[in-house]
Image 1: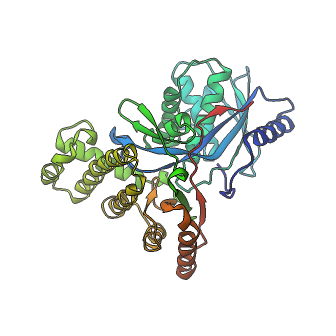
Image 2 (image 1 turned 135 degrees about the vertical axis):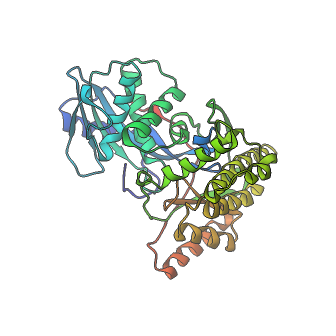
Image 3 (image 1 turned 120 degrees about the vertical axis):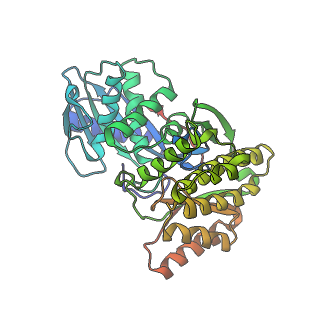
Length: 397
């Protein structure tokens, strides 16, 4: 995970070379390979993935890069170029959720633990990581770490796991080892996304469709606005929303909220007494419908009409789930007032980033309006950059 700026990263080849050279200086031998896995931004479908719902993320060009070699002595050595800390050495056989591998090292350690829990004999590894995915920005810096380590070990140890299976391994690492009850969207986007496409994912069975998303050809752009407000999803707020969704499913007699039809949402809400649970159910069921509306619009070639759907989704996240914050609300309101087609917060919320759909010619004006609004409000200046649909996890060398 990284605090690096969100400008366009160096070429993959240059980054692979640099990370491999750092690995060699650090561990005294060349790595067996170098891999990369991207962060993601989610166009629509938030807090739906752990409800077996629909999501539509895209991979960013910002990646976690890992140089990795196997070990046979049961030791896991991990190092990050982005933390200023030294090498963390762990006993593979002793890895447990309660074993004390905290901070950033919990993500690669959790992947090794999850692979061993799945029956794979991982006898150790040397890992050196460097990432350009901004941390705390709702862009899945943790999933990028999990995915890149999972893919590297899958290749080096010949485990034969598919990309969706590796995504599940990363999710298990984050759920059970790190302690964040996330769904599988982030890891699936990092593992399976395709350049130039959105990933239309059904999180119930992990069936997916690559949806062409060439906004430039339509005279449009999608901006990411990182508010620089940091979130920590492990602090309980995310878990509270998940618990509210699960309580709603129990009260409605379904396994997950995916089973609640949008057409019958008013009837379902009438059966719920707890206003917090009712709000969770309303958001999830309506956001699943927003994903369906978005895919229908894109299939019809009407990308501009997606804008209001995004803004509607933000209102639901702000008012029903209450996971927004003043900075995110300011981005959305200012961007829309300045002429954006639509905007919403993306990711887990409580800070992080928003996305803004704009006419390409309005990019500079909308960006300036948001920056000026932040300055007037006394907020730290946001980082604004284009969301370019990029390739998923891959081996670089």
